[in-house]
Image (cartoon, helix red, strand yellow):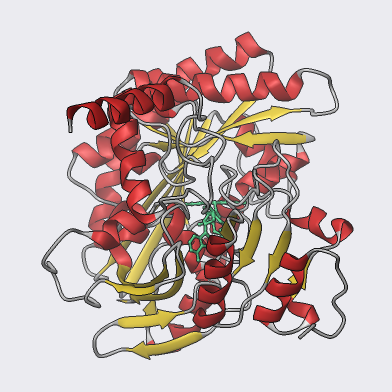
Length: 488
Ligand SMILES: Cc1cc2nc3c(=O)[nH]c(=O)nc-3n(C[C@H](O)[C@H](O)[C@H](O)COP(=O)(O)OP(=O)(O)OC[C@H]3O[C@@H](n4cnc5c(N)ncnc54)[C@H](O)[C@@H]3O)c2cc1C
C-alpha cells in the first residue's frame, strides 16, 4: 500500500516510506537531501539515498532489516554535530535519523539512573533533573544540541570529564538494533562487573559501526555542594601548559582544567560571548573545582600556588553563578567563535601525556608557520586532549588540502610523544589514515574482525573508522584469510 504524499519510481523509497508510515517521516528529493550530505566535518560531502525518521525501536529494526535484506548501505544519525564525518553517507546510505526518538523515558533517583531515547539532547537531561539536585556529567561543548545516542557512538567527552569520566563511564545499559535487524539489550543496568565480555564498553565509542542504539540507561549524579571557578592568565604558553602538568602532579584533580591560547582568545573575544580576556595574553586557564564546600578554598589556593611558580600574570575568581556561566559560554562556544576570525576552520582532536604539552604546543606552532595557516588551540588541558583549530579559507585553491595536511601533522606530533589521534571526536572519515600512526596493520585487522562479527556485510556505516579498503591492511587481511583457508 502506497503512503499518501509519496511518489517515487524507486521501489525502495516506497517500501521504506511504508515502514515509517507517513510522508513527513522520509526525505528523498535531492534538494532536501543536501541538508544531510555532511555533518560537522564539512570537507567531504555525499548525498544519501534517503533519510528516514523512525518513531520507535520497532521501526528502526524494520528499516534495518529491510536495508540488510536488500543490501542497501545504511547509517544512524543523531544531531549531525560529529566532527570526524561519522554520519556522512559515503556510499549513498539510507540515513536512519534518530531525532524523533527524543523522549526521557524514566528517571530513578533512588538508584541514580535515567533511561532516554537516542535522540534525547544531552543538556536536556541535566535540565530535566536539575530541580531535584541531579545532573548528567558528560558535557561536550555541543551539549545544547548533540544527542545522547551520538555521544554513546563517539564516547563523547567534555570539560568536566577530567574528574567525572567520559560517556563510557556513565552508560549502564543499551538497547541496540544489530545490523540484521535483531533487537538486543546490552548491560545489566548498572550491576557492577556483569559476567562475560564488556559489550557496553565495546559498543560505546564504536562510531555507529556495530549497531544502532535505540535506548540508553545512564548514570545521573547528585550536584556537587559547591563550585569555585577561576581564570589564570599567562604571558607564555609554556608557563600555562607547565602549570597544567604541575597541578595534576601535585595530586589536585580539578573538575575542569581548560586552556586557550592567544589565537583562540582573539576568536572568542570577537564572537558572541566575550568576557574581557586581556588582549595581549598568550594563554588562559579556566579552572573549576567542585565538591563539599569546605576545602574548596584550600584547593584553589594550592592551584594558585602552582600557577604563581609558573609566573601567572593575573588570576580572576568568578564573582557569582552568572559570571561563571558567561565564562563557560565563552569557552564552550569556542569552536564556532573561530568563524569570527576565519572563513573556515578544521578542528583536530589529539591526546598527549600532559607532561608533553609544552613540547607539542611548540611543534603545533611550527606546523602553523610551515603551512602558513594560523592554528588556534582551545582544549581540555587537564586530560591532555588537544584541539588544534586550523584556520583556512576554502575559497583559496589548495588551502583546504593544506589545512588537512596541517591537521594530520598535528596528530602525528601527538602520536610521536606516545599520545593518540582522537580523544573524543572519533575517527570517522577524517582520521582513517591516521589510525596507522597508532596501530599496526595486524591491530587494525583484529579490530575489523570484531566489526565483522556484528556487521558481517559491512552495510552499516561502511568506510569509517579504519583505513581505506584496497590499502595494505585490506590486502594483508585477504592474504590472511586465504592462509587460514589453506591451513584448515
Ligand atoms: C561546536 C562543537 C563542539 C563540540 N564539542 C565536543 C566536545 O566537547 N566533546 C566531544 O566529545 N565532542 C564534541 N563535539 C563533537 C560532537 O558534538 C560529538 O561527537 C557528539 O557526540 C555527536 O553527537 P550527534 O548527535 O551530533 O551525532 P552525529 O554527528 O549525528 O553522529 C555521530 C556518529 O554517531 C553515530 N550515531 C549517531 N546516533 C547513533 C545511534 N543512535 N546509534 C549508533 N550510532 C549513532 C553516527 O553514525 C556517527 O557515526 C563538538 C561538536 C561541535 C560542532
